[in-house]
Length: 356
Image 1 (cartoon, rainbow, N blue to C red):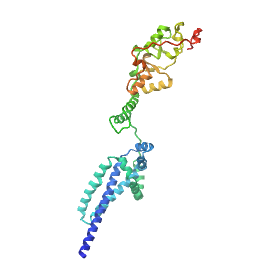
Image 2: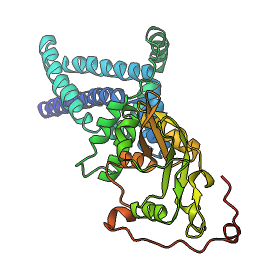
Image 3: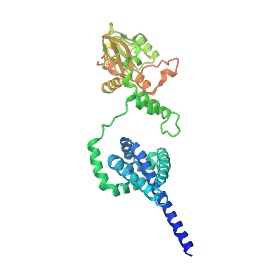
Image 4: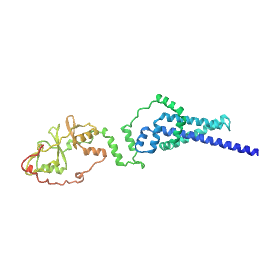
């Protein structure tokens, strides 16, 4: 009976030691995995996700913001678990054997495997084990808090670095062909086009002045001239001087709807003209966009060396952002339809010219 009692005691003791070793190695594994998971998370990214309502990010963010306190707590707990593992094993094997076994257990099951696992989805595992981490901080606070203060002085927080335009472009490109992305190809193209605006110049999208239809102030507007403009399908026409050094404004076709050009003869200078700014050919497209918005004009002349060399429209700019041409009615219809203007208003019939 004494023999069986002794065997039962030894079995219970050995089983208890095994359980203790398993618990300590597991604790070490959690510490090692959390060290990888929490420290690899970007604070700025966590804040953005938290603002968007991500519950996991909200749970982890306070722990990640106090980096040094979290780090000190994890490492203190991990070192304690590793040391305790060796001490427990010395109860059944001698010292150097216990050290070898403890080292192998910790390296394989307490370091390599958990780090490989936690690195696969850092935010999910950091969130799942956040309560455990808070417990570690509470238990080790008497030591980890002074360490946090010391580390904060030795290693103050570094200034946040924003991604460059090229890096943002690469990040956006990664969404192409990825089924998990919420962005479609059109959205990706628009964002990439918008990012490239400051790198492209007005000369890249302008229509050369040789291929631009324009009028002068002294150009006579009669029936044939109006038919010519309509056949070309233009809704607005720039008014330039003979030397191509100045723009006197833009003539809108909608302003001519009520004018009777059959019985009356007018010059361009008699028509209402809309002012538009002139920009240099090296103007960045994002600056050009602001010019369009501030001036309210849809057409801007482009100059180089004090001479107008082309015309850019807001449609050209939008096409550059979208990365494809925008077709309107005149683009789709090869043969323009000639439309008759409505009958002139009484003001024109009485011989009054329109105000410019």
